[in-house]
Image (cartoon, rainbow, N blue to C red):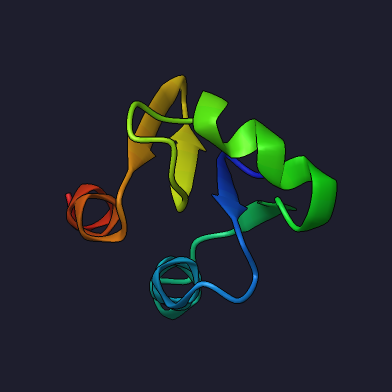
Length: 73
């Protein structure tokens, strides 16, 4: 099991950005896709109710730019 879970919509360019960053850095991760009816759960993931969101070691980070900065640290 991976330490990072990426919550995403598959077609979102912002979610794809985070996925590409994770792959480029060689970081293993799991994805949860919120397509279809699961999309109703997205507002529960973050304060702004949008994806991408990652869960990592008990921390939840939202917004593709903030995620990129977090992964760089």
